[in-house]
Image 1: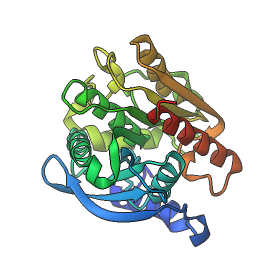
Image 2: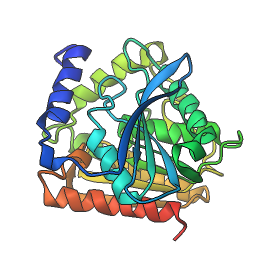
Image 3: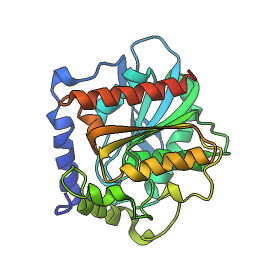
Length: 292
């Protein structure tokens, strides 16, 4: 991917995800509805997934992965279906603005604004007042940042579901970055390509809106379920974030999935082991939201 343009990367990612899905692999949910939610500078496309059963349900603001450069509502359609079905939640997937057309902090500002809108409209969306955030990879970064940005600002969040999140570009000494640098889907060159397109003039900054691990304090954040993959460059920083949350008095359930690679949350249709990890992670998140 790092040898091509953002548009080429988007097309390739769409082909790999949505483009390879067959009808029988579609995860069943009660309904899927297109809508818009508030972004920082205007409406954003979004997609609402509701369970089959009668609600109301907890509501989850979901932010897709793709290095802040690629990915969209379609690439993560089945992932959101899985999350809706497995955790029995209303999932609102948000198409935030992408880099390099809209560099940092545009996606963060969109994610914060969208979560505020979703929280304010949760009841009419079929929610029960319990609101959480979730996302994978870059979306996990946004979910973690939103939880920090909304802390103490009148938008109580019940939980955060961080799927192999990118949370600390500042510290390059995590062993997993070098151990899993090549050969496991997400490679160092692609990570650098995403970063260059996303950060622009903010390169080298320790702004916690870019690297949530760098926040001065993690106290008072909502409880988290953090899923990592054994053969993922981001494994160690995700697990370190879990430890840092725990040290700050925040409940963090860190689940390492042995044998898995970055991106496995869309690979359950091919891999029984991935499927089992996906379902267990979603089960834990649903349990967290219901306080059981």
